[in-house]
Image (tube, rainbow over all chains, first blue to last red; front, side):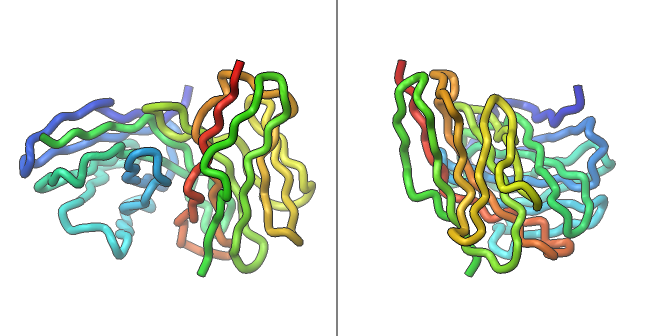
Amino acid sequence: DAMVIQNPRYQVTQFGKPVTLSCSQTLNHNVMYWYQQKSSQAPKLLFHYYDKDFNNEADTPDNFQSRRPNTSFCFLDIRSPGLGDAAMYLCATSSGIAGGPETQYFGPGTRLLVL
Amino acid sequence: AQSVAQPEDQVNVAEGNPLTVKCTYSVSGNPYLFWYVQYPNRGLQFLLKYITGDNLVKGSYGFEAEFNKSQTSFHLKKPSALVSDSALYFCAVRAPNAGNNRKLIWGLGTSLAVNP
């Protein structure tokens, strides 16, 4: 089945220690998104890639970076995690038809704990 | 400013009864409307969307939603609730003709509890 995969499902890191979360997809979608979600709140878009074009949200802290080496994979790098970065991180994909009703398909998420 | 409202933080229904989760929006034009469901410690699952046409949209797991343009609403419904429907439900909107702006505007979510 085509899907969005996130690894690991749970990640524990130390305050200030860089951490990388990964996402892969078998949907062959052009667009990949990273969201942050805290305690059952609405997901907050951090950034997205359309193919190799990176689109950052204006309020995303510089501490958050992303890489997309190919169509299938996308990484979220948190350079110096703070306690406030503990959250569920969701990866999503969409087909990439500009202006259309693109449905976003989500992975299961990675829950990040910062000690 | 564009916004989505889910006026109820929590909805409680008895198993077998009909359920409604409300969503209203404030977006210019004719937006695309989505419902997602989230089970504990899981990602969001797509339920259904409205693009155009028939105001009643049918989706996954027996859910449907009714688009009402005059009331700018897109309420999620199910004729007979199951205990397994207990989850967090999010309404989201994407403005039409948004070009490369793919950002969804999200409601704050409604927690649905179905009691046996």
